[in-house]
Image (cartoon, rainbow, N blue to C red):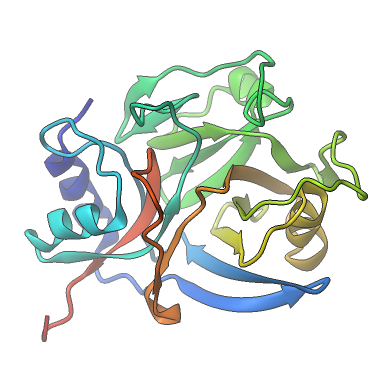
Length: 250
């Protein structure tokens, strides 16, 4: 586990004077979503898990407090993958080049083990959602990475296990990436939604060929331009977000 100070220092170097992620609310097939686009050419997207004392950050506010001590602030943020009771990640987790948890290639119980699952891989100036077995074959050098599942969209196709008439609905969040890797688009449903409907949001509404489910029920969003910072009922595990400089009057 790596000190938070190292994480924050790296992001400060990478970010520079970045613009904020752009967030909006849109309705697709009668369901409202909050959608945030991160431009990897101008914004530093980072993963957060443990603070300087090796305790999970858990909440957006704890990350913001740590950043504020260094003249920075947390902009857009979202929970970033499934975790155990101690907030340790279930699957692959890499932060600032350090692997905290190794990749899990096999099927298993729950949504995470509903193959194919996938990995969000962050590299300098790009982000990519990659199906897990493809990730293992290609072995990209990710600066940061988080594994979750199931995949929502794989090469333009919906996950084969999703049913249009499913009755299982939850608040859900996920991420899709553009083909050139320059844009990561995060979405969270504002009301319970099926996997099939959520996957169609990414493929049919957002036009993304690769998208990954991050979590459901515990899903939370921080979007300052929507005046939103979800607190939830318990601490989170991995969190992803954009680091921004503090405004002069803060």
